[in-house]
Image 1 (tube, helix red, strand yellow):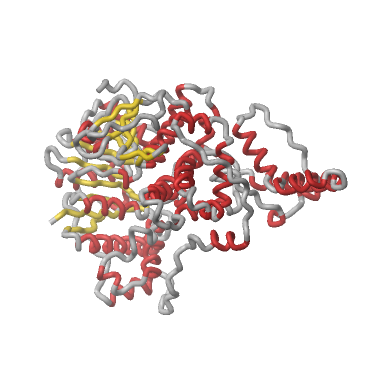
Image 2 (tube, one colour):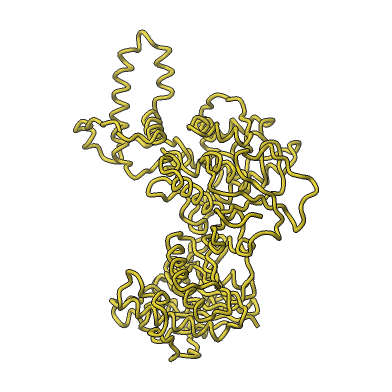
Amino acid sequence: MKGLTEDHLYLDYFNQNADCVFPLHTSISLFLLSYCDCKTFRVFLVLPGETASDAQPKDKVFPKDLDICFIKRCQLPLVVQSCCLPAVVEKNGRFCRAGLAVVLRHIVQKTYEADPSKEDILELLGFKKTCLKACAEVSEWTRLCEISIPQAVQNFLSVSLDKVQSIPEEVLQFEKKLGEPVRVHNDDKIRRQKVQQQKTFVKEACKAVSSQEGRLAENLESSPAELELSLALSKLTVQKTPVAAKREPSHIRKMKTSELPLLEHVFAEGLYFTLADVVLFPCIHHFLGFSKKHQENLFRLPLISSWFQRVQEVPGIKRAAAKCNMQFLPHQGSVSLSDEHMQFICTASDEPEEEHEDTSFIGGPRPTMTKLMKSGIEATFSPHPCPSWALDWDSLPAAVNPGEGKMSSDRAFRKQQQLNNMVALVKKLAKPGDKIVDFCSGGGHVGIVLAHVLPSCQIILVENKELSLTRAEERSSVLGLDNIWFIQANMDYFKGNFNIGVALHACGVATDMVIERCVKAHAAFVISPCCYGFIQNTAKFAFPQSRQFKEVLSYKEHMILCRFADQTAVQLPPERRQIGKHCMGLVDLDRAWGVEKCNYSAQVISMEPETCSPKNNLIVGVPV
């Protein structure tokens, strides 16, 4: 294997069928590389198991202009072995990007950096470069594109064609999405332009109705989305000088927003072709190709069928498809939306029903706290094991100090106090050779200090925001730290084993995600929760969590505690802050009791001094 002279892209490979490489995440990644005409990466396809497959993979479905190698799983770099694929490792070998959305965004950015003339490639990241940037844990759209649809289609393809299959629910969700109104950043302006366009179209159509009836009928069929299509096409050609738009008449400018026509979908996210289309296109291609013997599927998905044909006309798509040996089905023609279909997609993926109204529910924190108190449940804080311990910040290198950068001196001092608490508790738990993971690491304040004071431990920073993690790497390079890794990924994509998990001010359910990940690894944890008001039931978590709290509180009552737990800001009256602190203690006590059922000893501690942060709770858990 060559040395790390360029970024290495690692993709799972376990099968291929016709023009599809499995898993679909690999097909999608190869398709984007072909679309971008990107030569920046050396691509490694990772064979299943620890031994090479006896059957040599066929290369006809792999883009011929890519440098592709096949490797065993045991040959993966150690940092990649801790992550789900796809993954990219930079040439220094310690910065890894993992997960489909993160890797695809990185491919787009590296393509543009290598050739700034490829502005159309950068446009894939959408308005403010946010396409698929929000992690799947918090964004339903990212989850649908990155996880749900690829997995659903892959499962669909694994079933014999002879068996009658229903359309996957996730595909129906995409069909429903395409039928929803479009919202864009300049929504109001474009909708007023659409009013003007419609009025002009009707006026010109009426003049020609007597001599061009057939042609008029054809135009009327395509006219509703004409403005949307023209905007989408202008974006695709990256026009340097936009066409000057005439000012709308006063009666159009005075129209209420509620009176304006809605915009129609052209591409997956709305009007413009983005990375989401590139992700979904191979999935839908393989789904439609596999479903060709069941033509009714195509007629049940008219919006997807139209979108699929439209994407094929995007410059570069057919070229990329040819490189990947993707054979398109003959165009089936447009399919109109019947009332039956509209009802079908509207009911295909309804939101889960809300829980029944709790008639005994009383709002406000005091009734809830009183209810718990009557059951013998009160916020209790364990003594801090080392309340006066502190790092000698003056003797540490400047790059270790959180004050380096744009942080104010007062905030930097409080951050030092918070880090004193975190490091003191971790030092009591850590042993030489331990792996310590700093989840939601941000700029690496916790991880960099730990890497400096615990040189015999391996520190791993896991963070979804690229800019924050890049800054952390720069600081560690200044310090010359060689015991630290950086992983840009959603938390779910980190699969490595470790001994201690830490998180400073993990927002909302991120705290619960860190606890869950630590429990799975049977690791100790030191976590400072934050943003209690963002706590809510998710696909993974249901609140309250502990048996003791469930026996007393309903979900709505527990949410009252969470909302008032955020009322701890220094600007608030002392009595209100005290109630907020009490609610914080109760929410975290529920978390601590909830983890004890997994054979953990857990306790809630207050940072010292408590003035170091309005969110000064620590949850410490140790396997027993």
